[in-house]
Length: 292
Image (cartoon, rainbow, N blue to C red; front, side, top):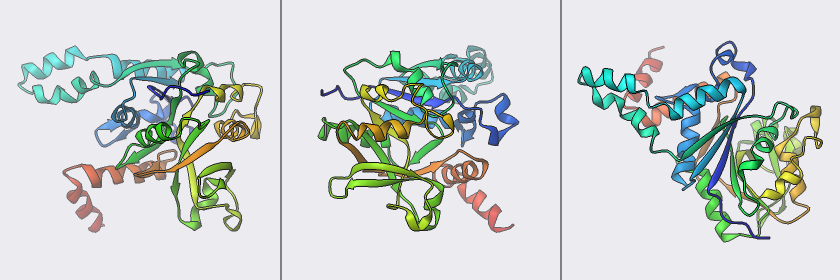
């Protein structure tokens, strides 16, 4: 079956982010700032740039309230205050939130097992049976390009694909830290499987998989709460690997630069990357660090 090209994206942030405690006791991890915007907004904007029309954010019960307020509250009190102070321009970043695609925030089904596949399974009812869709992990941000657009463009060229995943080439010395792609066919860039944190000498390639996927509804056959894997978790990668038995799963290399924000060190690296590339005070930060 051929599916309609994606107009919807599922973005996940339903974990407890224990490596960022205590701040994530109150603030969802993807609401931590990268420059003037939270991580989540950067991922939403990546989807918007690719033409996505509806976004389903899957959060914890506590995070759901935060995201609904952030994306849907026009903060009229702030607008009036800024206007009274002659600072209307400062309201523009809030106003711009209204130009984003439709955003629906849901809570992950609490009956589902732990694992990065459970937020996707929780959003099943929002995906029509005849449409492909995008999944983006809010841990992952991409500078310089939209992976979502790369996925959609690829799907238009390969409408028979069961799924398409994004990869980034990584240095050999860090291959033991990530999920590494083993290709079934190097020329066609089709997936065989993903080897999680292999020994460096055993890594099947230098292609790292991360949280940008184009999936078809067939994935839900495998994203079943009963199909738990390692540590009794429901893994998206397990479901995608099983889809290779049904047809081709393609691998596309990112046209941008992927950085994870999943731990404090990598979060700070991503923050600095953003500042140095996009903020007008980048030279001030550079000089500050040089003086240390």
